[in-house]
Amino acid sequence: TGTDEHGQKIAQKAAELIDEGASIFIDGGSTALFLAKEMPDRFCNVFTNGIAVATELAKKKNLNINLLGGILMKDNLTTASSLSELYFRDTNFEIAIISTAAFTLENGFSCSTQVEAELLRVVCKKAKFLYMMLDSSKIGKIKPYTFARAEDINVLITDNTFPDALKTQFKAMDIVVI
Image (tube, rainbow, N blue to C red; front, side, top):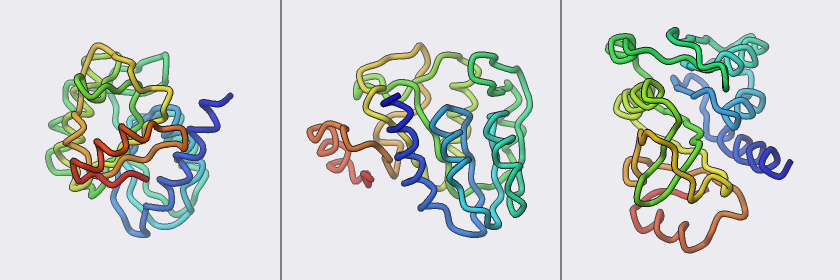
């Protein structure tokens, strides 16, 4: 589908931003699964809450994969836990790469469950840099729980149909748009 094509292209762009030796968090969304497929097989430490993402990454021999436990969300095979903050207390990653399910300027980046939003808020705080993967089909959609605002991110990775006016707004906030 068109959305899959957008997700693949966004994932390809994101994969190019991952340096060898990086310590990163990747969520468990559909675009994150594309990212796991696109990631080069070089030494990295990857934290994820995505079971499908971890399974895909396990095909690469040079990645260290840390899978977060917790409640299984069956709709997207991700995990989240009220203990996420404790789990990440002494864990370090430079970059969080998150694929969002919904975005509006007013409501920010949002997801479907409170426990996932809590996990992503912790991840956003913990990461030195926050990269958001957003395909244009998610713009204008609102999910119940906001986990980040536009001004919280450093890099927006998007597709070629992303509205120019919105790109300009992100750039005005000193956010790199790729």
